[in-house]
Image (cartoon, rainbow, N blue to C red; front, side, top):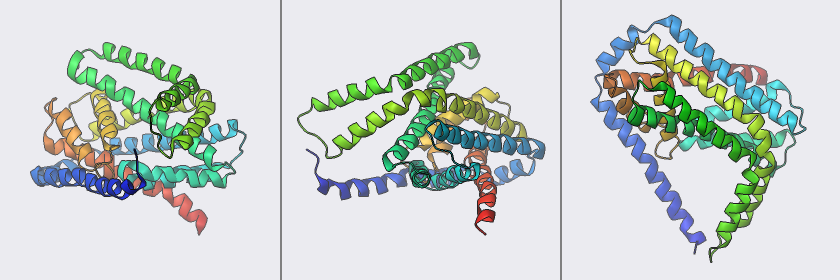
Length: 317
């Protein structure tokens, strides 16, 4: 039986859990030859860095268009600049919070657009669910690519990924039935968490958004994932890494998925560990791997987010 008194213990455990990634990051930092990293940074090719940022901004633009179109289909006409703010600011908060929970502040912006709190939560959760699922599919395909098929069998990896795409699409269309099935299973247990009714209501709300998410969120999320792979390809060219863009992209997907675990702040430590482990299989040094991880996951991403915040700050002033 769940007790409300257990909540402080859970919160304390969660805080301690976050230290895992931070301690891992500190340990990795002391294992890296930072003189070598500095040499790598000095030899970076700027033209490909520009390409990286251009693709990053295109991906963000797609996220804004995706949400605005989704809101329009729900019957809410929102100005582009307002949707832009509702995407950029929560994304920035997500970079500095464990498991990117800061992105859920988007609910506050959506309620300002006239959505009810329940509908706003449904939209944000559905968006995050689709993005997470697409990332998970790429990571699973990456496991086959890294561990089972081998890096020469790209065709089989693509087949696995497309099969997972079909499965996810069918699940989104039928999310209502899956939600009802989950409620029935939970109803079989002798205990019920106090939030059970709220979760059931939320599931019904997600069911109403499922088909719309399948037709809008899903294809946009796939396009954004592909652009992320292109970003890593540009970064690899900038650093003259002798690894295919597909390998870098799948390594990105796997590291991004792990960074969503509430083990650190902004994925520090866990993301670098995955990059080092996967890129080492291709003969890439730990120094180069952590350079790629820090540039993509922290330095370049933070720089791009700060640039994207400029129009918002300009508007407020």
